[in-house]
Amino acid sequence: MTTHTTKSRTEATDRGGDVRLTGISKTYGSFTAVHPLDLTVPQGSFFALLGASGCGKTTTLRMIAGLEEPSGGTVHLGDQDVTALPPYKRPVNTVFQSYALFPHLDIFENVAFGLRRRGIKSVKKQVGEMLDLVQLGEQARKKPHQLSGGQQQRVALARALINHPKVLLLDEPLGALDLKLRRQMQLELKRIQTEVGITFVHVTHDQEEAMTMADRVAVMNAGHVEQLGAPADLYENPRTTFVANFLGTSNLIEAEVDTRNGDDVVVKAAGDKLVLPGARCSAPARAGGKVLVGVRPEKISLTHADDAGSVPEGRNRVTGRISNTSFIGVSTQYVVDCAACPEFEVYAQNIDRDPRLAPGADVVLHWNPAHTFGLDAAQSVLAGTMGEAGIAEGEAA
Ligand SMILES: Nc1ncnc2c1ncn2[C@@H]1O[C@H](COP(=O)(O)OP(=O)(O)OP(=O)(O)O)[C@@H](O)[C@H]1O
Ligand SMILES: [Mg+2]
Image 1 (cartoon, rainbow, N blue to C red):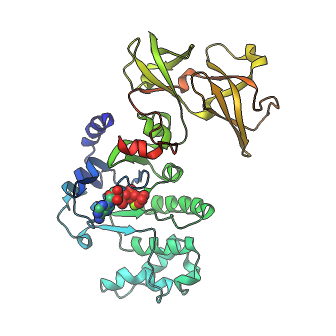
Image 2 (image 1 turned 120 degrees about the vertical axis):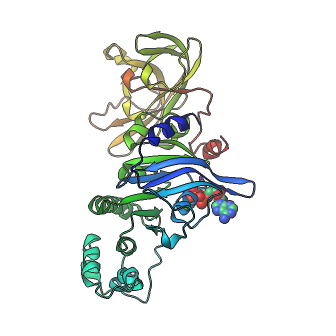
Image 3 (image 1 turned 90 degrees about the horizontal axis):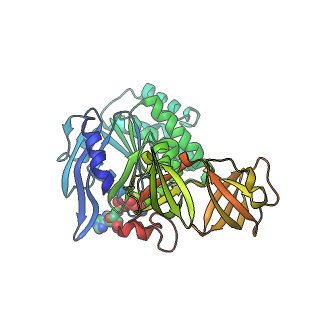
């Protein structure tokens, strides 16, 4: 993986991190679930492992927890090599998707459980503080079945946090909740993490969830970390087609490098000339070479062909015909058939809608060249999409 070396090098200098995986891997017979990976989760950060089903997220998390023995590599927590330690000797707690609260105990006793097990007698103050932290102070004497899914999830969180782990591992903890509650709990989890300040490693297949909550996200694909960074950086500067497609939507256009113009790269795509910043091009930009040009749907403006003269100079522009529109309230999503890209997606905020922008209309798509990125053309354009070849395409890579 091209991104791997750069990542390891920058991270090798970051030794203060709470969780450090070095060459950690897991094989089951001849199948490799996790390829040797290096990962540092800085202390006190909210870190997300994001990827499609089966990419190795849970396996990685379980190796941190000590629930799964690595086939190779080491796990450090702080300065301590914990690779050979059993789970209960690691300063780590895990919250799973199924919260498995004790049904016969009330909320207070569920949260007190870890303290009581350690023989601590006076638990009232600590349990009270934990219940306040997760805003369940009023519910202390209820049984788990009398709480909503989101409340039960918060009990599970309090039950883990009361042990003061150095690291909290969360495996799809919001998976069982409906969308609205999920959104609410994402903000709640983030608030709690900020308040307690311990390292959270959160596993999810939901890209929005990862981006909302995490300071840093590692995008996993088929047992590899494909790219790692802050959410906005991953979104704006994907380095692979998998990341470009898996995080949101990208229009990817096959193009040929024409020339370099100062810091910019000029490319040709189906007769149109497009410009992109050289610094945002992760492919070698040699004249005549192939490159995939990417632009996010929300960066593009749509102008009816009759008004083409009003498009400002200096914008990247492509012409096409609208094939589909969907009105989704805050925005309208257009699919435009262009020579360079048969399903060009454009998201336009619904401020002043031009009624002429309907299926069949000829349009000009235009955007600021600075919003364009370039990727190595020797990758599948479909990697990371839900399309025909879909995720399977990425997994086979
Ligand atoms: N005990 C096992 N024996 C054999 N294969 C396994 C075992 N555990 C996991 N795998 C395989 O390893 C791969 C990674 O599994 P893992 O549970 O880490 O995926 P995941 O990213 O957590 O997926 P999901 O989002 O569905 O939970 C999968 O292909 C899975 O089938
Ligand atoms: Mg899993």
